[in-house]
Image: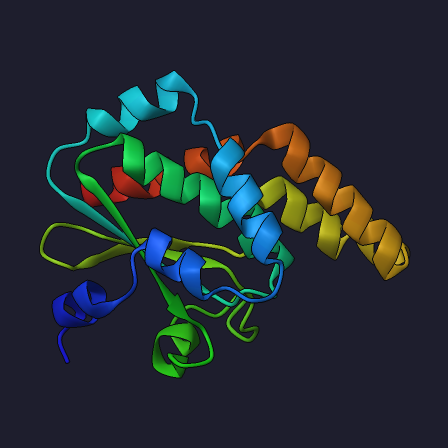
Length: 175
């Protein structure tokens, strides 16, 4: 199956939301409250062409529930962005092509495709600064305390860093 056909057959974010079981209320609440800063909408609107964002996710993933609803809201606000979601476990070939540090099946992953469904780059599984914390200082904390810190970080950031880092990928596709 071509990447175009695979992408088109993938669920849209609203369709994906209807399938989530774990953290269902949180997925919906974060999506309902997600607001994208105007400047990030304007920056994306200036991009030429049509762009396709494909996430690899699972409903149990705390990082996915904190990031993908914001990416979805952004795609809803920008006409030439489209966003779809596939399950990580049902798509091992895609996951294995986008491993964190070349070895970990960490999610979420957001793959950026241009209008011809050529991959431009990918983002994941966390914003850079948060990933640095989790792999550094965060390892010293017990999992409960680490999760509280991560959750506070996401609440304060409101998805801004994720969108800024994905925007950097678009620049690679326009050069």
